[in-house]
Amino acid sequence: MAQLICMGLDLAWSPRNPSGIATLQVIGDPELGRLTGILVDSRIAQSNAEILDYIQTQAGTDPCLLAVDAPLRVPNMTGQRQAEAELNQVFRAYEAGAHPANRRLLEKDGQVRGEVLVQALSNCGFQEQAEIQQGILTRQITEVFPHSAMVSLFGLSRTLKYKARPKRTWQERQQAWHLYQEHLQSLTIADPALSGHEGLLQVDVGSLKGCSLKNYEDQVDALMCAYIALYGFRWGCERCHSFGNWEEGHIFTPLPRGLWSSE
Image (cartoon, rainbow, N blue to C red):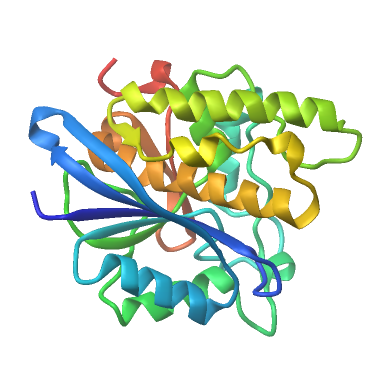
């Protein structure tokens, strides 16, 4: 198999805020069902130029699946996209519904950041695709949603409450972080497998505050996005689904086991 790179990007809606980004090198043979993504880099990036330079450097000329947690195509001025409506029908029961995406919320200086990224990456041979196809080597960028992916991949009854929210205590967040780290560690024996991320997961979240905690959160979420790309490459539509459509916006995510097409 040609060298495949899977990248995850937890993209902030504005360049004023940092974004997390992570890179997996993929080894193994998908036809034999043996794939492992090795975490080779995880960091924080800020500007569009910094993010683009990172992607170009890490991907080189290899096939690369870039999974982005941010809206990449937002034609609607208000309300929500069909992608959010469809995803929420499946994942609302797990408290994993997606927030509405529209231009009134996302547009900064007349532009949606995800759309700017897609356009810039098209000059590097990347194409925006609504779904990641099983075993197909290509250079593509796809919108994903970590919360629905966690529910599906980890068999959760509801999402992990590790993010800062009103009335959510620090103790609740720390407990959720411990579970998040444990679940990510369990991917070392999953199909596909994840390795090289042990150091990232050994961070004591209780020792982090403010920007340090937020930067760590962004890097771990970027790792989650990168694994979604790897999982999509391994299983495609057998275990994943793209909600919405290419023209009006899409969200690609693994599905709970009961919804697998192979079940």
